[in-house]
Length: 510
Image: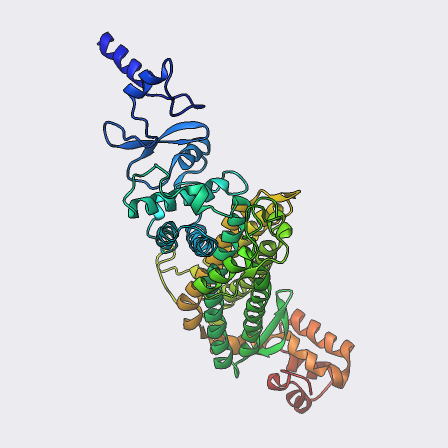
């Protein structure tokens, strides 16, 4: 047993190359090492479960069934934060696929070997289509520039392209992750470019359609309820009448404005940092590269992307994402108000306001039989709260750019995408499972309206504010009706009261 352990230790020692010289040449000790270990940097482990790859810090074991390389593995070792739930959002990875394909196309125009460029484009397409999602294990909580994720993408595309060309994984031949996949690029401009692509796609595919669906459903209800007169409430207390349709029209306008604000933030999201490279100067790119990449991305996505007019701003600040998040934060405020109104108006069924009848979707209690709760309203308000929290993190991240680079990029895009997805999905859920099924409880609405003391407001032009207030206070104290109290106080006749106090005449200016 001792002899076996000594042999194992000796074999491990001899198979490990110095970090500064991974492929020793002839000379004392060098020849011996070459005899004991294959000279290629991508040699396979004896058990065929991993291969050995190198980065500038030395060798690392890389799983044979993964396309990523040494830098990705090193990041998984250094940033064990949060686990799989904290991985870089897939929309960012897909956006990188779009970007890397576009860059390869443009680099081919500038002289990149077409064979290499085509292989990169094919591999990048697979990334953009989500076919290689399992090869991106890195978490958000890494370098603030997103460098490790950029290299994760470079390594995956490089190795997949190598595989397509019949080469050996990890060899970096004939497709090198830095020299070819990352050609004319830096993490400092590619990651913010991917951020903007991912945010724009999520807004267009999830957020805006969700808000539009909610808008249309609320608009339909506003029209359906146009003739139902109810009592209004301010400060949660009785106020003058309005129609249920008018009340819902306010919700419609809020969602319309939410959509308008989000669309208004998008022109800055369409500006791409690609071509700025390390600090915004465009070092190691060619004239026209930035414009061509933006045009390719626009063609691939169908969205109006352009090159950012100032790359220094595009790398050092992410005000565009803060602006977009601010618009989503405002939308969250609107949805919080709408959901709360609807759940309170639907409270009951016998001891609440009960003006609305909400759809009954599932049992509401594990102990109270028959209870049903406004769960869609609760889900939407929780989403709104989360979006507000996300905006705080995005605001802090956006304000923390130092000199030529903001280093809160992963945090910012994680939360922007989270907000967009939550708002879009929750809007659809709220629409389909609540709004479209809302009914007006007209019996309850009429009862509450006719009992309201604030109908007395209609008397102001006829008998003055002070006398109208006296009628309301007296009726409230005695438990009498406005009509009986007004007559008893001698301020007007029954005929006058019936003529002047008509809820249908209190719905707008004369």
